[in-house]
View 1 (cartoon, helix red, strand yellow):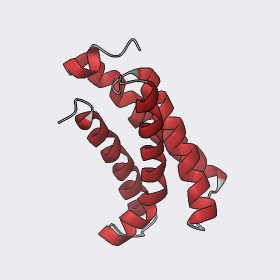
View 2 (cartoon, helix red, strand yellow):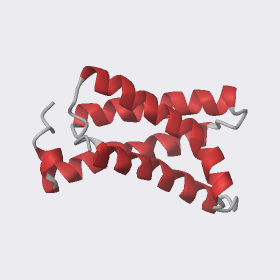
View 3 (cartoon, helix red, strand yellow):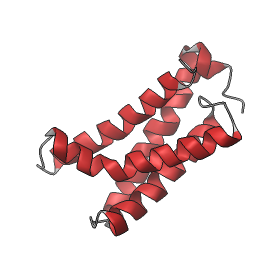
Length: 125
């Protein structure tokens, strides 16, 4: 198993937590189909960030990689949500998504860099 798989799993979990909490707060339910539909643009954005990030660097646990993944997840996710999935992108939603995904995708790297060896040795990238 490649060494970045646990980090990728944490990032996917961060996006799913964002979606589930958002759906619950808006009384949309947490049925699997609804969660997948809502998460799809952001998971595609996450995949784009990971693919392009790994092409440049193998330091998936680094802060720089986290910033890149955050930006890709947010920008690609919002663009897909608006233009491909025909869903809303209100300013308040963009602000909440920016803050939440930033705290979780970048913040989790700060936490793991202090706790988990695979994060610690790559935080300087």
